[in-house]
Amino acid sequence: MCNEGLKFMAKLFSTCQLVQEGSSAPELKMSEVNLHPGKGFSPDQKKTVLLSGGFSSISPEAAFPLSPTLFLNHALSNYSSKSLQIIADAELHRQNSVNFRSYTIEMDTRLCVIGSSAVELKDFMDTYGGLLDISPLLVAGYDIEIPTASRIHLAPRVDGCKVEYQVRSAIDLEKCTYCGACGTSCPESCISENLFVDFSACTFCKECEKVCQADAIDIHGALNLTADFPAVLILGEPKIDIKDGSTNAIFHSKDLQQYFASLFPSQIDEVITHNKTLCQYSAKLGHGCDLCVSSCSHGAVVQGEKGVVVDALKCQECGACVAVCPTGALQNERFSDTAFTEYLGRVELPLGGTVVLGDEKALHRLWWKNQQKSFENVFFLEFENVGSLSLFHFLVLLQRGVRRIVVLDKMDAASGGGLFKRQVSFAHKVTDQLFGKTDAVAICSADDFAGLAETTSGALVDEPLEAKPFVNRRQSIASALSALWQKSGKDVSFEPEGYAPFASVSCNVDRCTQCMACLNDCRIGAMQTDSSVLQLNHVGALCVGCGICARVCPEKALSLSPQFTFSNGFFAGVTLAEAEAMACKKCGKVFGTKKSFDRVMEILKQKEAVDTSHFEYCEDCRVINLFETE
Image 1 (cartoon, one colour):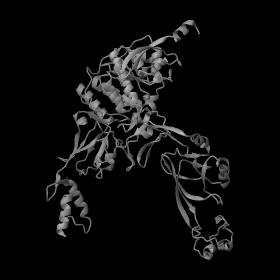
Image 2 (spheres, helix red, strand yellow):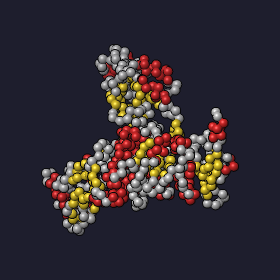
Image 3 (cartoon, rainbow, N blue to C red):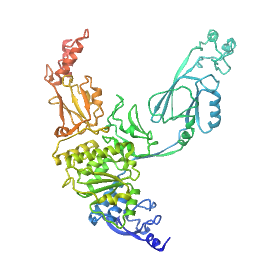
């Protein structure tokens, strides 16, 4: 290596460190550090440093958190000491606020092995019986050591597989006295001393039943059994009924290596979490939004009996499910929507400037290629997994006055399944139609950033727009779009192809009875009602187009369209139906709609011996009236 190269590697770099002396408030100080990989920080500072600009890849043994965000904004931007102090405080709060469930699971060696050959099953048990807790099932023939099963059904579950099967059970062992009469009377010698019945030789003559004084034998008897296993292995090619669902717990002979690879104690970090109160998939209906499931290439996100479930053992934290979730039900707890919004409220973003989002590796590369440069009006933000970025992040940043968002993604990994690019495309359509700008979000490598930074021109807004307190992702998206729409003063229409982030709902008022069934599963609140005037309303800005409302409508009065228009009705809500109130005949309390009441009466008229005289009363007066008439 040349002398000049050695001199460069020994160079000390200036970085920011958040230091606390005693009980005083944390203070930002500048320090000279050696960023050569493996050198780390000088040990005399470790006790007082709360946070430092730097890279964990260079200094993995640092005794305090390292922030690429702080390092780059100091090294490549022109922020004042006051601004850097604000960034350091925000970074420290962000890192201290990360919270997710972490635990260790021991390997579960229980395995149900299904095969059509007793010899093959026994060979497998002889080979792996010392390692695995094997429960064999034979689907053809009979063997004294292995139960023969029929009508086998495999029902995959998130944590394994439910096995349902039937086995012949000719002898009731609780009733049997072991007298031996059945064995001696059987003309085919089918019944062994172990009370095993060889049905391959049995002629079903029932001689054994006749001689059994304990009434313990039913030659046609069978038991329906159910068992749960963490995994099922199918040897050969027996015909097995496998119900719909994830088959990650079901292995075949060719998958044996894959199965053994899963047998180890695991440290589980539940970083990707799911909030069912925001999820627009209904397990009860088996219908609704399924973007998370279709986007997960690892089989970690499945729809089960209780709704959407994330298998943390299979999860690779790619972020695809988080990025496509329109409501925020799925979150990356390393930097959740709540934490992201709170973080933006703590720092000063450059008005009309650029925010660069990338993981530590990408930011390290960007700094390495641009050490001698300085970028005006640019804020660098470490985002550990750019695959989790979504329309929510883009719109919230634009709402706060950012002109351009740059995602550092050399391999374009964030665009898995195309949904990421379609969200970027929709963000471009919004800024194009509202402000005539089509480059609000850009994806590039760290090597190409310097050239891209020179091309931005023209601010979207002249000041940060009003942002409402964070409630959930969908509310924030609606708030950001509303603020941008109001700033532009334009009503614009969209007809998206493929990915439709919103939907319009129409209602056939002649069919609608105001039963409000459509409200029950609209957890995000797009379907709303005003009980005082009996109105059914729809807020398009909150609607994700899951279709549950149309599915549950008993009168089939609702229909969806992916076309929508940014207008006052889109954000404030439009009235789909309005009905005449049905008031109690006695107390005047409103307990439904006249139309719904007439519909019920029409149905009951077709029934015989149904007294409908009490249906004109509310629930309280109805009870009183029933007692008074008895």
